[in-house]
Figure 1: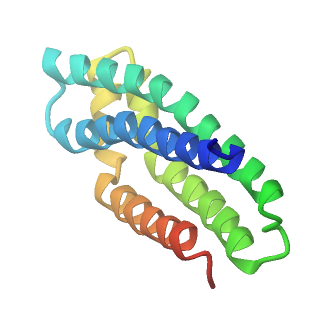
Figure 2: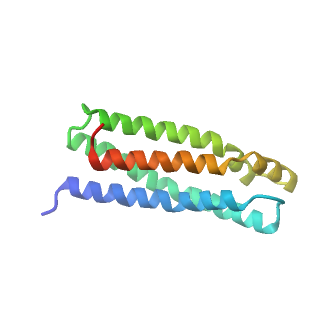
Figure 3: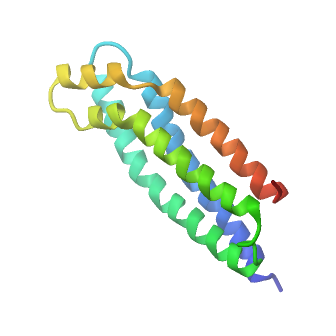
Length: 146
């Protein structure tokens, strides 16, 4: 019989995939919507908005199973789990700040406002922070050390 912990670990990985896949759509679109605003730009921004909503259930599953496993395995006294939480929060705050112009562009009504907001977006910086943060989190989860 498979343990509860094994199922939680499986669901944690499912949550990671369910979060990262639609989040990758957002990242790809943020790089693709440079330059003048066209009908294609608007379609890509709509796709990005739909993908964004798809990523939230994965993130929720990821957080819930991570916390649950922390209790089952008695990890709350270890530095690595607290480091992982701090990294997750810092990455979310940093990426949220960098992505704000992009998210505002998705809500824009006229081409000029959308174009102005997109010109302020910094997708490379957001991708770098997210990528490094993800690698740190995976390292901490796999090796459970700090």
